[in-house]
Image (tube, rainbow, N blue to C red; front, side, top):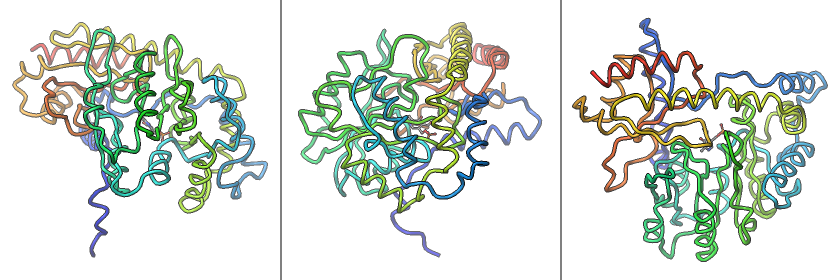
Length: 397
Ligand code: PLP
């Protein structure tokens, strides 16, 4: 059997290997503190589950339209418009089975072979995988740590631009860094994309996972709505990761192409799940507010515990459910030879499981500091405290 050549260009989420390690260690009877996966261990709010059950009983079990049921497209358009101060209608929305499919469909719709795409690194690993798989050239851009959190490396972005650059992937409310642009930085990104006539995918998967202040979207800036596709999803906001519900939102001519891709790929997003999606957006929001409250408490608990460990420094973002602490001093103190060895030592000595920077793209030249990512969406407060106590003892030993 010979596998097709293009598969050599397809990446994966290497973080799943971390889950395998944790599972194997747990199977041997050890306690595991899971900080590695961006999944949520909080149930989906009851009103959303009830709406799905009702829709199923009401016979919403056949094929819905490829672009999504009109009620959900309209609800998403309304939701995106209200929060971002722009106007979208249902024609601007293509419902998807999750946020993730928007990445490949955005690229399929707008990227020709050999086109260059600027994308964040460290960043969500599927960007690089899909760019390369679909025949584009993946051009990474990085971030630097400042007193106000992670900031885009603007000179690197400028220097990476070539006549073949066509697309820009922007993940504000960034996984894994929790990076968020201030007004000035977002305006810089917008000016850059307008000046160089780039299409933008604005990955807003974490737009609502925030603990203070207000999220901003690049589509709110003049000249951006017409060149931007928003990736939005119910997954994080309503603890619906396994339901698979999201959408691409943007100019109609691109959205029509994306819906044609739906026809060719999955046909449609699960029918009754879309009714649950309408209830999520239009119904009682107390479930969502409770999710944010729980996550905030976990974030504060984790940040406080990390700050007590000698040699760890951490910036605490107001968005996402990740912390990305710097652990260079600990790494050196333990005499670690690789990120993998450092990670596995923590797992085997303390049961604490996390991802390292390497799980979010190949490190760029000049990166010397060592970072890890801790997700607090899948572990309760008491277990965070317990796990971090063990980690402190081990790392300070
Ligand atoms: N974009 C980012 C930055 C993510 O972290 C994720 C999921 O973790 C996604 C998109 C995909 O989300 P979904 O589960 O809705 O496909």
